Length: 276
Image 1 (cartoon, rainbow, N blue to C red):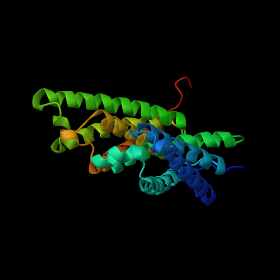
Image 2 (tube, rainbow, N blue to C red):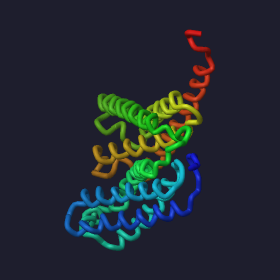
Image 3 (spheres, rainbow, N blue to C red):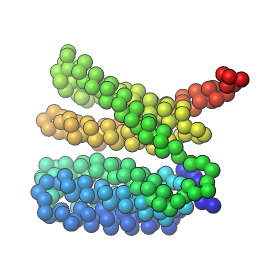
Image 4 (spheres, one colour):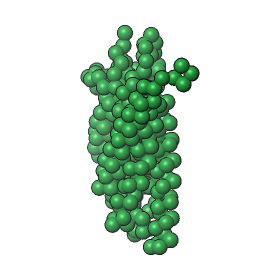
C-alpha cells in the first residue's frame, strides 16, 4: 500500500519531476520567446511548465507528498533561470533594459512553486494514490479555505491601512520603508487567520497544512502588491528584502495561527457531546 506522509524522500520522483520541469519550462518559454515583445504570455507559458513538473512528481511518487515537489520546483527554477537567461529571448529585452528581469523571474518562479503543488495533487489523483488508504496526509480542502480567508483578511486590512495613512500623510505613506512594520503586521494578522482555519477544523497534525496554506497566501499577496502597486519613481513596491520579510513573517504567523487552532481543536474535541 502506498505510504502516506507529508515528507518522504523519493529520488526517482524528484529527478523525474526535475527533468520534466526543466524541459517544459524552458521549451514553453522558448517557443514564443522571440515572437512577442512583451513578456506576459511567455511568462504564463513558463509557469505552466511547473504544473507538468508537479503532475510528473505526483504520478511517479508513491503516497502523498508536499515538501518534495517544492524542492523539485526550486531546482527547476534555478536551472531554468540560467538556461532562459542564456537564450537571450526577445520578449525579456524590455525587462533587461529596465533592470527588472531577475525580479520578475523570481516572482514568476514563486508562482510556479504554487502550480507545482497543484500539479502534484493532480498527479497523485491520476495515480489513484488514495485508493484503499485510510486518510489523506493533507487536507487540501482546509488549505484552500485557509488561503481564501487569509487572503481576504490581509487584503482588507492592507486596504484599510493604506487608506488610513493616506488621510494624514499621502497615498504612498503606508508603503514607505519607515512604515514597513505596519504592512508586516497586517500580513501577520491575515496569515494567523490562515493557520487558524487550517488547524482548528482540519483533523490530526496540521502544521503542514498551515505552512502550505500560508505560503500560497503569501505568494498571492506578493502578486497583488507587485502587479497592482508601483513604488516611488516606478520602483517595485516590494524589494527583495521586503519579499523575504513578508515570507518569513507570514509563515511564522501561519504557524502561530496553526498552533492556536490546534489548541482550540483539542479543547473542543475533548468536551463531551452536547446531547450525551
